[in-house]
View 1 (cartoon, rainbow, N blue to C red):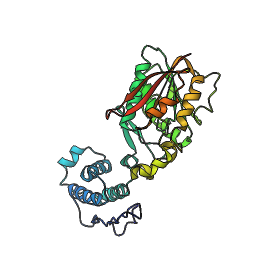
View 2: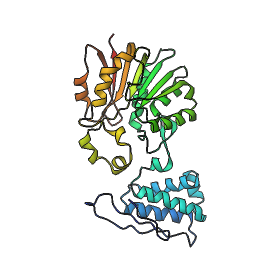
View 3: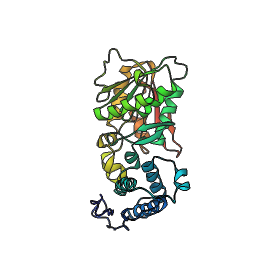
View 4: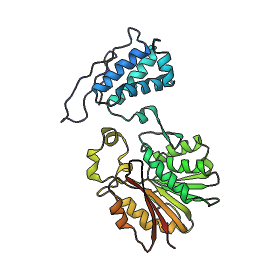
Length: 317
């Protein structure tokens, strides 16, 4: 974590006491005017000393966020002085990144399926590989005129909002155990003009839904699936900042997946589908959990790195 600022200088210490502590070269205060390019150069050196990869690119991204401009502006206006107010904001952002806070939480946004989503520490940061889940669901919904969709573990709303954005006649329900996460999802739904078609429910999986009335054509989910013992091996950005409840359900990481397999049939139409994401080493374990009397395994789709990532099932009755 970062120490307090002293006379406009940044210092950092590492997260773990077993790691070697390195004092990066400090960024100077803005008592003497700096150009935009000089400030980016100082920040890049500081981030590099804090073990941030691609420090130059990240410093440039932080400056672009600070000035609310694109990267081209930084190139064409790099010799202009940065104002004291902007420099102070820039240092604050750089300090947070040096503590390994994810850049998405610093900027408050992340792109997913061609849409920009608000993200906060209350929600998991959307990953590119999860777009495969959206694509799989869209394929399964072809030919259904006005599909009803349920998203379990909605978080930022990236999955369900992407689906609603693509399917103008669809309606959906999103559930999450975190009311704070659903507030983020609600704002994202408003941003992308799908709020009137999306019901958001605080619920532990399906517990708050009326099992006698709710019948969906498809249920989608990116559930917490990381085994508890694996958390310590995650990147500092993940284990130190992203919501623990969205990462792991404990023990072997399969508790929520078991619930989906057991409870989803009661909320699906006849022939309805269940699509969910899994961890890189879980496809065989998940395959063993599927009851062939209940589910037809349609596919276990691989992501761009050839990792089994998305399970697609169809209810048999």
